[in-house]
Image (tube, rainbow, N blue to C red):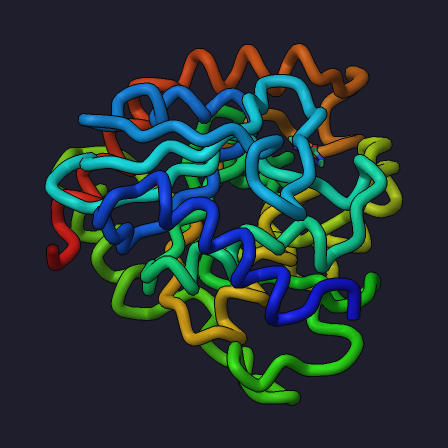
Length: 276
Ligand code: HPA
């Protein structure tokens, strides 16, 4: 165990002081190229990760490294502009540290977004996917080490990490807006190298529809501490070996830019349709 209950509380205390009575309800972790949603928060209170004890700084491209608190589509939100990744050298516990802090601050819902490679050959790059489940069985758990019972039990159930009610809300919201929404399983790979074609074939055989280097640790931690989770993926590229072309970060960022309106429109509409 890397962090104590006191450390989580110390981080929450520093943030709470800045919030002046504002209580966030929906935590949002925004992935590659999607952090702009944080710029649309009304009456924002912005806190840099470096000003919060024990927070790591995100070094990935397109990740700003700050928390934005305020109102978005009628909800009290806490937007993480920039997430931490295991490939940056951080432990899974460090990567998901902020989720527990946001839980202590009052968040009971987590919305995660990411860009991921499309493993499902029936789909295409640029499609959006509702995450219905995840596979992260080849790397250690963010819950490894002594359990902190204040957050949850030692052996948490993971049958519904992605809350069925919120999945249904996203389905209906997408349908209302005429946005096609795929549904599938997010297969976590820790990177930073993109996968080999053989790894993608393996991921497909095992039931993965999308492959990415984020999200799964934070969702495990959110489930452990009883948060409801909604996960949305932008399939930014066809996964390795599907097309005869190399993968690049630029392709991912370009796809995120191109999907910006569709993706942020869906996320905002989901927020609007959630109970206040
Ligand atoms: N693989 C892993 N992570 C990713 C990919 C990919 O193809 N695209 C965007 N993030």
